[in-house]
Each structure stands twice: as structure tokens, then as C-alpha cells.
Image (cartoon, rainbow, N blue to C red; front, side, top):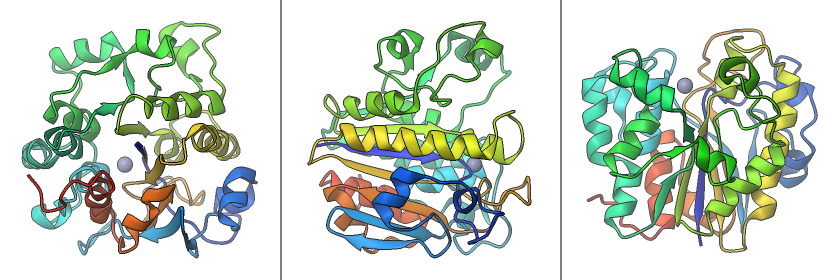
Length: 302
Ligand SMILES: [Zn+2]
């Protein structure tokens, strides 16, 4: 069995009106699975399925941000409460320490599970980091803490990795690579197939956050379609014992009336037998412990 942990940056639950792209545009797979659209009223719990909004504010005033939110999501530690504030962008020194100690991938590896971070990295990324021009994101630090290798574009070409931009829509513009389009369902299937070799598969996409901030030319309508097809590809390629766990660090994409992050709850979606492990989850800090419980790791830590 495998747990496929999909992190979507900036993906909250919006209102039941046209400000919410998941209200405005159709997502046939998700709507069929959940029997409802993705809104703040999201609620479903039955064997093999759990879907609800969870809190990303974590008791700290202000709008949730990426560095603290992702640290909370990938460690289970209430990072904004420890720092007394929500921190944007990339983890600072204190957050780096928290991730180095409590990384979900590190704890899975220590417990003897096979874990993989599915995202493909470019050689340019590592070069920029070395030159001090890029800082590691929370997921990168989560994988570094586990001492695991990173996937590259060779893995991607062989279907053994998934790019954060899972249809490769930015490839022609940024990498000069033509004809590299990947159907969303195929990318989702590739992700699920990593679950044949690994017990825990982590994947992140910042498409919702970047489109929410209007930093990409893609329309919200496109992303609703693409994400729906991507998740269908994941679920349809899963074996009965596999589970999909989807969550976010803060809202953004679900409110088209603002280009900024929101204080909305974020969706927690679990498909598969791990769903029952998430029964008590109410905040993004509850996700990593529940994933580890699903792998039968003691939630008490290392
Ligand atoms: Zn974020």
C-alpha cells in the first residue's frame, strides 16, 4: 500500500458563488466523487473517503502564508504559533530547524518506509541555489532532512517524476523544450505509479497559488479542468490499498475577487483506506501525523 500526499499551494475552499472557480466551472470527476462542489460547506465521510475544510490559521492572527503553513503541513508542528506570526515565501532559520527535525519524509524513512519526493528538479535550480540566488522551499527542505535523492528531468522523461506544472505548460517558454506537453491524467497516473515502488509519495504543485496571484497566463477555468483530470488520473491508477491525501497551506485560488491569500479553510481530501486515520483532523497540523499513522508510524515522533 502507498500514501500519495499531494500538496497544492494556495488552494482553499471558497463561497458558493461565482467568485469561486470550483463553483463557476465544472469539475466532473471531483463532483462525482464527492457528490458536491468544492466550497466552504465541503463535507463527506464514509469508508474510503473523507473531505472537509481544515484550518490553516492555526490560532495566529493574520493571513496564513507559505513558509509557516508548509512547515506546519510537512511536520505537524504549529510553526506560526511558535514564531508568533505567519511567514511568507521560504522557511527562515527557525523554520528550517523545525523541518530538519520533524520532516514527515525523515520520520517515514526512520520508521523503515520507502519514501519519495516525486517532483522533478532542473539542474538550473541547484546551480541557482549554489550561487545564492534561490532559497529552498519547505518541500525541498523536507526531502533534504530525510537524506533522500531528488528526481530530475531524466526521471520526468521516463514518467518516474512529476513536474510542479504537471502539464509542462511553461516548458516552451522557460526551458525552450517543445512538444513536452503531458496530459493531466497521464501526470496523475505517473504519480500514482510511484506508489508501486514507494510507501509514501510526496508531490507539490504551486499552480493554484501562482494562478491565484495572476503570475501565470493560465485561466482559473483551465486549472479547474486540469486539476480535476490530474486527480482522476491519480485515483484511477491507485490500487485498492493505496490512498490519496490532498491538502494545502492557505487559501488563494478559490477567491477570484482577490489576488492575495485568504483566511479560508483549505480542503483535506482523502481517498482510500487511509481516510479513517483522518477522522479527527481539523487543522493543517493534523495532516502529517495522520499520514504517518496511515503508515503505522507512531504519531508520537522520533
Ligand atoms: Zn503557499
